[in-house]
Length: 112
Picture 1 (spheres, one colour):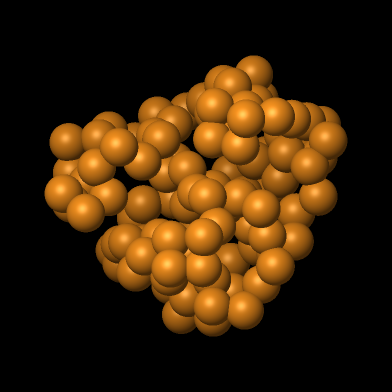
Picture 2 (cartoon, rainbow, N blue to C red):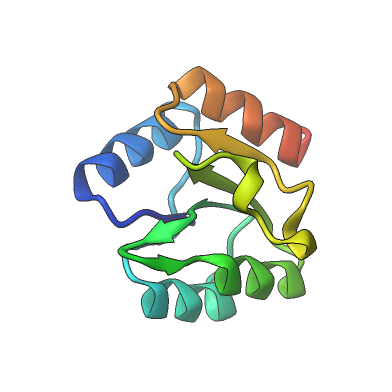
């Protein structure tokens, strides 16, 4: 699952994921769409942009956590802004490379 509000970045990240051997089960650019996917989509892991046009993706992360789905935050803001309930979540600093995404996925899932 991929949550990213910038179309070009979403396409690049999707390409990274496919190159890493992943199948993207769904992509969302808006918080409401991402929340709907977080509650229903079957996924092993999600890559979440923290800021979706001014709305924070933390409710999406909490919904995924409730369902036992791993997630990684992708952000240009760093880990300092994460709430305490999400401390320890893997964070990729934007911009990142396919190799960095692969490393984060392997660390999160244990395989790839």
